[in-house]
Length: 188
Image (cartoon, rainbow, N blue to C red; front, side):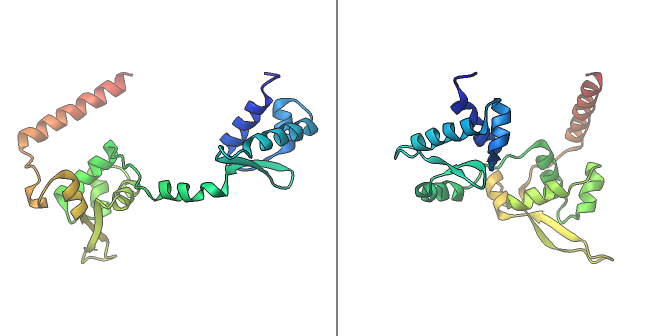
């Protein structure tokens, strides 16, 4: 490990993401702070070449790895691209409840799921699959949630009235599958 201080410093700065004090780097590498400074100066020179997108800056006795300013335009382009949205089992379960029971309140969703659903509902709102559709006319006036046009587009449904019909036989099959899953998990 003695000869790869540059690689170790690079890994530290990349992984930490924020500035790291020279003394902490020196302690981690078991070398003197002066050696760290010398190695980082070499690294800075190497990174200053035009074909590199990063640099190492010094901030009050600490170093940080960051993007070069000339890369900002490219970074902005990538940041503006939509993020891939992953619908986990929890999100799909919550979305299904909302789709079939809409308009529905969070407390009704939680009663059906048996667990808190704030995160799932908020994530579905963020993904624009669910939206607030009004308030219930009861004390506290809780929010009502329903699916959006984006939900219909994504799932290829013209209307929420056209969702697949769930028969009693299907419900029984779902119950058996859920019981089997619980049994498998409890045997682990």
